Amino acid sequence: MNSYFAAVEQQANPFLRGRSVGVCAYDSPGGVIIASSIEAKAKGVKTGCKVRDAKLLDPDVVILENEPAKYRSTTEKIFNIFKSYTDTVEPYSIDEAFMDMTGWFRDFEEAEEKAREIQTRIRNEVGEWLSCSVGISWTKFLAKFASDIAPKKSVLLIRNEEELNKILKDCPLQEAWGINSRMEDRLNQLGINNLWDLKRYSPDRIRYFLGRYGYYLWANVNGLEISLVHQGSPESKTVGHSYCLPKKTNNKDYLRPILYKLCEKTGRRLRNTGREAQGINIYMAYTRGGGVGKSWKVVEKIFTTEEIFDLASFWFERVELLFPVRMIAVAVFRLSETTNQMSMFEDKLSLKDLSKAVDKLNDKYGEFTVVRGQMFGTGDVARDRIGFRKID
Image (cartoon, rainbow, N blue to C red; front, side, top):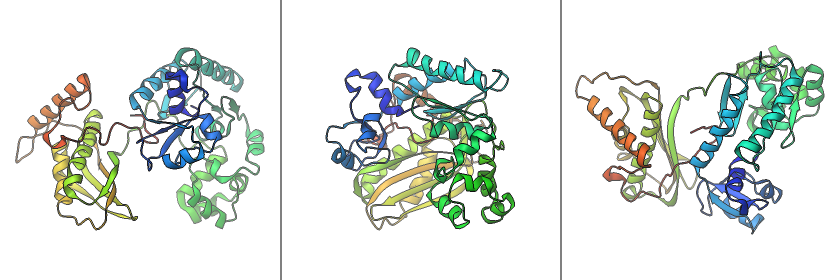
């Protein structure tokens, strides 16, 4: 999807159409733009730009805080259109998906025709202000690569190696999915300066220097299928939540309720996936750079907010915060399907049931209708948001 969050906002509010719009997680000078409209991008307001800088670049920019529920409902409608063309749809993020058309269409030309039909249906059935770019090819990587380099609102088809070679000539390395600036530097050291160089490089040599990931990159640009399209979203290995503090401080009385709310957000997400965890990670980033944190495994599986907070609090109360904190992150890992197994030392089953009951109430009547006492005064803290590469 093109300029997705901003386009959804323009779709919802016709008065924003044709105007410069920037969507951020938090509307504060230090907040970060997570999506900008086509009009805003033309003024230099792009993803990653600070709100204060966006207003300097374009004094007329309209800054909006994101509304995840609005984007999720729009995505659901779009994905329902996808599912009417194939039974294999893999969400990659809230604004991107893979579709395996193998066996559904005779050839690339028919797939291209259907792709344009999908674009039309999105405009007609979901929103006239919503547009997408589509890439079609014979591997998952090449389809994404084509969609990334395709002009906005268009369809780019890579049918064969001859067409691929023409595109790769002088194509920058970072145009390829999986190559960031650090990897680009490492490839440059091997004499690989663009994707055409990467395609022609020795697979044995690149694997020697960069390991399996180097071979993965080489195979991708050579049209070898490394990763198939899977039905539904692949399960994440961690569940968590983070929050950038409006007040930078190392005052634990201020930080403690925020930490609890992050544990609650993490617990809610964990329980929604129907899983338990056996590991926890806490991190607090300093304003001066760096930070302090800890990641550890636990013997007893954790499921409830209280279990997560007890572990986080045990570390938090003992750690010395040397500088003001700007961001707190909580995550759990080593995930497995939830069970009703009872602890040898205490009955956790009732706590699980209580947590599920509270979740159901909040699902029905709205987030934080029922809250723990430690969360009083945190109503505007760590609100719902969607991170990159996330669906929910």
